[in-house]
Amino acid sequence: MSMSLTYLLAMICSNMALRFVPYPTQVVGKSAKPIPVMVLGVLLGRKSYPFKKYIFVFMIVLGIVLFMLKDKTDVSKETSLGVGELLLFLSLLMDGLTGAIQERIRAESKPSGLQMMYVGNAWSTCFLLLPIIITGEYGSFYQFSQRYPYVLKDLLLLGVTSAAGQLFLYSMVSESGPLVVSIVTTTRKFFTVLGSVILFGNTLSGRQWTGAIVVFTALFLDAFYSKSSKKK
Image 1: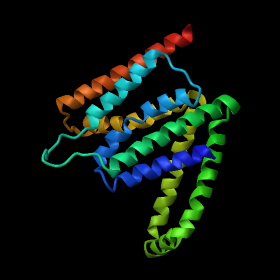
Image 2 (image 1 turned 90 degrees about the vertical axis):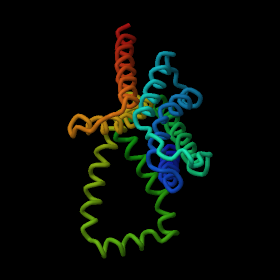
Image 3 (image 1 turned 30 degrees about the vertical axis):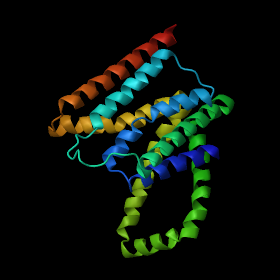
Image 4 (image 1 turned 45 degrees about the vertical axis):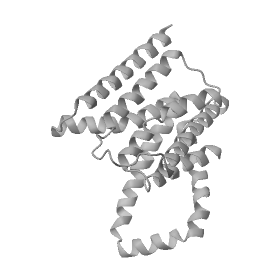
C-alpha cells in the first residue's frame, strides 16, 4: 500500500511541476532519480552498496544532466527556486521512498514481478478512484470520449504497452532491485535522444558528447565490476 502511495505522489508531483517549470528542467531534475533511490535504499531499505557503485551512479547522473541540459538562451530571466523546483524535489523524495519500500519488500517476502505489479496497481486504483469521483474527472472523461471516440482505441493501446513495460520494470525490481530500475528508466531518455542522432543525423554539441562518454563509461565500469564481484 505504501509503495503505491509514494509511487503515485512521485508521478503527481512530477506532472504538476510542469505547470511551473519547462519540460527540459523537469527532465534534468528527474535525471537525479538514482541518487535518492540509492540513499534512501541504504537509510530505510537496509540496502548496502560498495563505494564504487556510488561513484558510477553519480557519473551516470552527471552524464545525463550534461547530455539533456539545454543551452541558456535568455540569461536575463530569473532563476530563483520556486514551486516547480520544490515539486521536483518532492517527486525525487517520493522516488527514493518507493525504492526503499521496494527493497524492504524484496528482502522480507521476495515477491515476483507480476505480484508486485498486481498489488501496486490495485492499491493505486483504490487511491485514485475516490479523487476521480470527487473532482468529477470521470464525467469529464466520459463526455470527452463521447465527443472523440477514437481516443478509446489509443488509450487501450497505451494501456497495453504501459502494462507490458511495467511488467518488465517490476520484474527487474524483483530480480535486481529498484536502483537498477531507476538507472534504466533514467537512461532510456538518454538513449532515445542518442538514437535520434544515429538514425536521423541530428547533431550534438561538445557538452552532449562529453555527457554521452561519461554515461557509457559509467555503465561499462558498473557492469564490469558487478560481474567481477559476482565471480568472487
